[in-house]
Length: 231
Image (cartoon, rainbow, N blue to C red; front, side, top):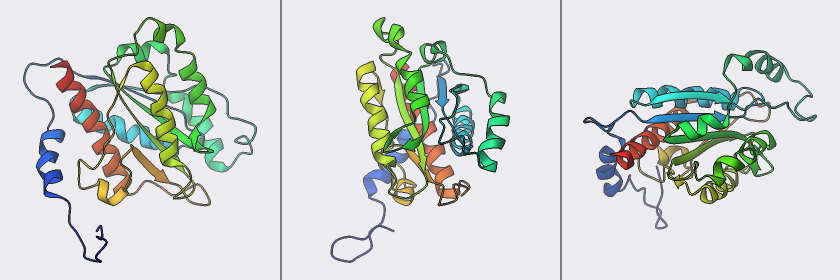
């Protein structure tokens, strides 16, 4: 529970509790289904697990979801293969490779990447850089965007990775829909910029309840806001 400067514990602000229902209620009525693209790069499978969790939450919120991986080779450093990396490399092709059409198709996009020196992985950046023709036609604008990431340590650059990603979204003319503190779960995972996970020194810590809740909230919020904009 958060602690105020005077040492007293404080609860979730009432304004957050009031807003939560509004922001998380799936958009009803006759509005067309929101199209959500989840595009990610994963080296060991952690971001892959996060992407699948977000996809399930997006579908539960009523969206049509495209789950897509960035089909790029691992760097030489990443090829110093652990069992997790080798297993993930074998399983990765089960998810379709991302294309520019997936971004153009979507009303909302979630990008996922491991943290690399406080930035997104080069593989995801290369994919984003390939979207120049679509950017030039204005096809990336006016969509809802958000992101999720993982790192080995608690202060391993997660926030700067998401902020760096959002620099690109501003150039797209996109609409960044960060979670902020719009749900009590954000006072547990503590990341108002997106969703994140700490994998630990051995890079093998599984997603816990807090991370899953944060991903559920992020995907649901993105779908809900995209639906309201469309409606």
